[in-house]
Image (cartoon, rainbow, N blue to C red; front, side, top):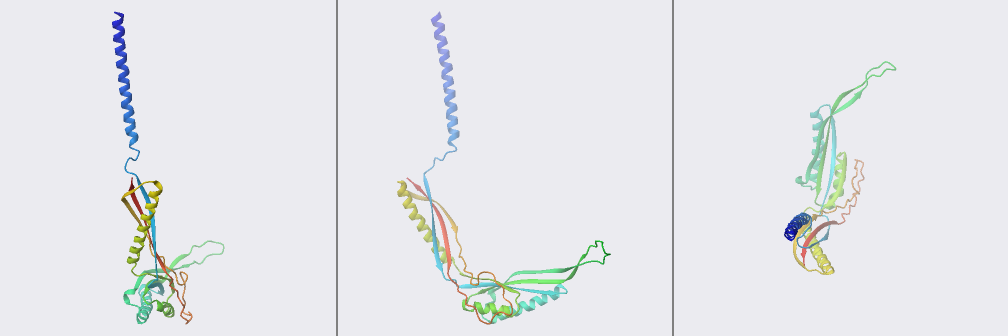
Length: 260
């Protein structure tokens, strides 16, 4: 009888232990699967960057000039501004600038105010008031210069015709699509060469490209007059020499390769 109960108890305890083991293994498997979600198990890849640069001489220049005019009313101020702008634009066209290369970049019309103080007894504070005193017009024109040899003369021309200021003479490339294509081709070749070297150093083999990213570069202009400048009517009659230098068009790419 004792052996019977002892045997039955042992079987019961064994069943309990086996059940606990199954539960523990199930919990461990669930935990492992949950943790696996946070680990990358896909194919091994490497990423490399490449850069390409193309130098080119600028083929156009551009600058802007402004005209400011005032009047007792809005119409008078606009008429004064238009008269001066039209005279300058006509002179530019006569000097060989195409009408499509003369563009209004900014235009504003707003009232002017004066601050007038009120009669006041000595020692007392008396507030003043703003009184409208006519209107002011500001207009900025952007000019594209295709014949770079005339750039200096055109600067003097707009100054002599009464432009308020002239700023931002820069030299650039009108159509740089071909330069961008060439720079991109060089960048891709550079990245591929780096990928081969890296794969060799790591002891792996490139299989296929699985990613591409391009950070587009833009031509870096050379400012022939050192950036912004101011030109007055008393400007020297000697035409300045304006070296154009070269522009750099840059392309940067990143390639991702699968490796084995």
